[in-house]
Image (tube, rainbow, N blue to C red; front, side, top):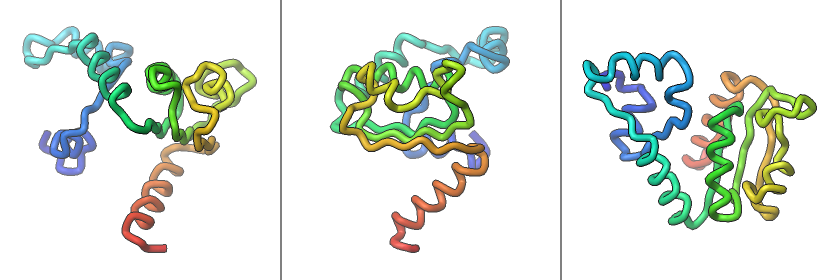
Length: 148
């Protein structure tokens, strides 16, 4: 990966696995299917799922920063059930609860399915993730550095 500012490059350099549960749901996945011989890329979803299970089961604590919703939110919460739920969760969303979508589901819904522990520290932040996420990351970086 040539872009030195790429999240994927940083993940690779720091040996942090990246999982994309919905990789085939959309244009990117179609291109993987159409071009996999030329790309030299093979996707093994079962192997990925087993690695996720191993990470969840071997973790002392589980936390999630959920940006938006849909398959990524569901996938994260689903596997957390193996440890009786997440210990920490931050949901950043613009989705509302009343339409019944998972994207708008409140933490109490996850608690009812043991996807989030009743003792968990959790918060829902309503707003545009493209605005909120950089502010949250900047705040975390300042705290880590001991700045105010």
